[in-house]
Length: 185
Image 1 (cartoon, rainbow, N blue to C red):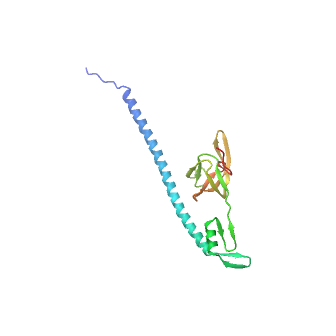
Image 2: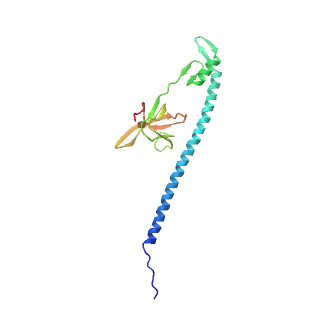
Image 3: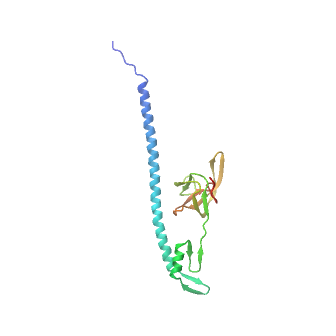
């Protein structure tokens, strides 16, 4: 009589371990690809911003060269020195007056605050900001508030705030994540 070999538990365990290892590898690879994709998108965005800044700077210089300053009743052409002075700052030039813009600075108060394309949790994340990172308020907030859990049982009900990144890109952050002053660490 021929004896039948019994299948042991060991081959089944080996197959399960191989499948678990393969699944872990797939999850790790997807995370790595996502991280690299985000980094590449951010790099491309920074390059686009640099090009936009160069065009804006060129336009500002052209506008300054073609604008006259109004003083009292008399209009006189702007001197070259004054043109250079105005094109280097944050001055806005109009034919009627020279006006200086004042920008409100905001500081990130939550480590890992997400800088998004739009004013909602569904909007894509442009980048993640560290605590005390400086942003410029763009004088625009969302029409409605949104409740978001901030952790430790704290639920905030705030508006989304439009801000500008120091490199010029505009986006939105949740209102509870920024403050008018830097936090002490």
